[in-house]
Length: 279
Image (cartoon, rainbow, N blue to C red):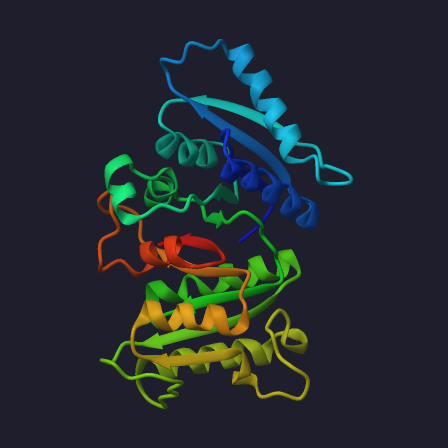
């Protein structure tokens, strides 16, 4: 996963401003090009020039807290944001889409929809959903040991290296109502722990894994036994993660989050930023 071109989806909201600010700070850290995209309806009464002026003013206001704001490229698209954001990112070969996450109840998402959810269901580009303020230090990757799940590991490593952060991994083995840390030595989870340990061992000084001095290789790996969502949320709180990385299967119905979709639930419920890797 390269971070050379970032696209921030912006609108006239606090969440939109948070996406712009986060993309700018992330671009400064990674040396990436940053494009801020706004999407307006095809039947808008405003002229393109007026939309661009308003867009530029919003971006400047969002970046006013930065001592030295980076150069930002502005872009305009017409249509539905949930469709056009992903289309723009793919057409312009973006490496990451940054979106502000609105806090809404399940009923609100059912009645009025959710742009962020619509984008991630369609996007072939990784998406970073951010709360009001986003830090970039502690990254947690959630893995499940499946072949598709392994596709999340390398992007998480690449992303953490690019931002200069520290990485930890959490694996939750669903097994009834068991709680606490559980370290099985057989099966799919054991294979995943072995792969992770080998990768940590092969990297220089354990980088970018979060390894305290003189600690064991598996100290950066936590395995829980029980509810997947609850286990991941517990680990986010325990290590105070700034960003959760997880795999997200594209497609699925719009509207309210279905009970069986772990990724969709975590995208909305995690208290930190969430980076989705399309599977």
